[in-house]
Length: 266
Image (cartoon, rainbow, N blue to C red; front, side, top):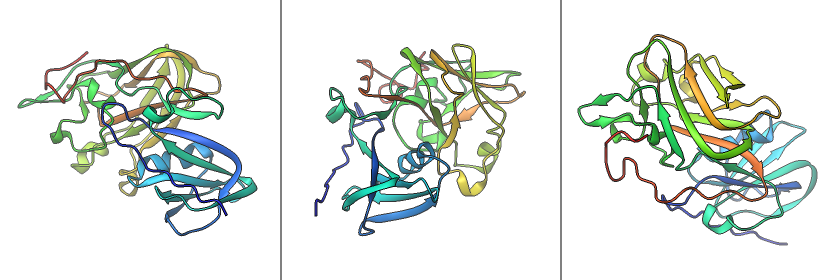
């Protein structure tokens, strides 16, 4: 019996979600199981693990469309044709390795812009708040995006290079119902090409999990934009942009945002 022990590395300067995919394996015991949820794909299973604060691995049963979430002290794995093991690892530990495909968050600490920046008595809804890696969904903690009221609002991230995008995770504000209920009618484009659309708004029972918007097959580009064509503000908290790569690119350095200043960053 082989036991895999994995300690989740947390470092706000370098941490980003990276999923190592092990095909033909499943997690065989329930010793450290922290959740069982229905999932439509390995992507949605990875998203569920990403949104859970203590999840470091998951077993996706392809035949049953079920995602088994497990904590950082991983249980035993075994060979199983209808399953996929999804493990999270730190960017610091896996930056220069290759071999297995992994889902890399390309947006972390990248340059961002948006149509306008809302200022609530010195708490800015700056575009960089969406790529800071912090999990807070409370605007008043200074970690969320907020534009002014406009006929068309948008937010954009420069990924640094062209990638084939698989999906985008977006977390909504949870500090008041009026905010998450306004997260709707979202267009996602990559270099002005259609990627996906989210009708919304999310259900109350789903607001603590990221909203996953899948990209059309083969959409490749550098600039990913979220657009809301509603006469309103645009508010959300964290954005993760995932591509399937063998080596995850490192974030640019240096990078400053809310941690040093509340001034709007572009």
